[in-house]
Length: 278
Image (cartoon, rainbow, N blue to C red):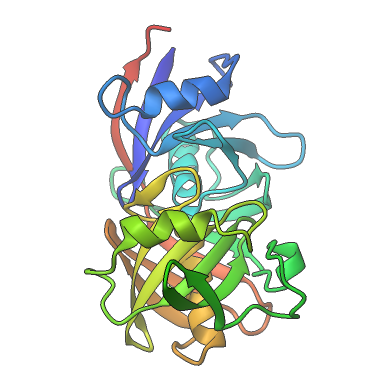
């Protein structure tokens, strides 16, 4: 089975072109390929499939085999894959996901390859019942959440998948490995949650680390960066457009005031291709 390894800011996935390959059990395959000693090594698996309602369809699976709604870093790589492999010649494409249809604008470099991808991530969801958060509040903004003996002020947003954003003084030295999994599995979040911890540098520059649901800490999370900007703006901590600094690099996130949509711009990088003996 042919595969391609790609990453968006170090958030790496194994990509399978299901126009050419057949995947019988994607959950098990995700667990196998993701293993960094016995597999290819990745944060998960992405399948590129035909769509009846968009140009292409993607399914993504975390390293634990669970299927996720969307991944903002992975979808940029899907855009690069289909253009660079001449599956389309369009520079604006649509991709069907479990979080709806996303529109991508591709920036082509001098080598006729995709270098940057701008993704229309849609409108943020801030109603707790739709995220979901087990709360009767109309919005879950700067609310107290107790973990161990600490109380964290949390803002919850969905970008098609759920996020809990907490602002901290020093994100580099924050004990993510301890707090992240407890936030992910907190009883407030019936579907578990992606947990972002954010340091405000200034109103147009934010630093974040992320504990992804089903994957643990990753180098970057595109939907998480979008949720971080929304949460920061709702708390009066950022402008509507900012650079989000992640471990793997920077994303530019904009929350458009006119149409309420989030736009995310960042790179997509090919690592290598290969053959799986399965």
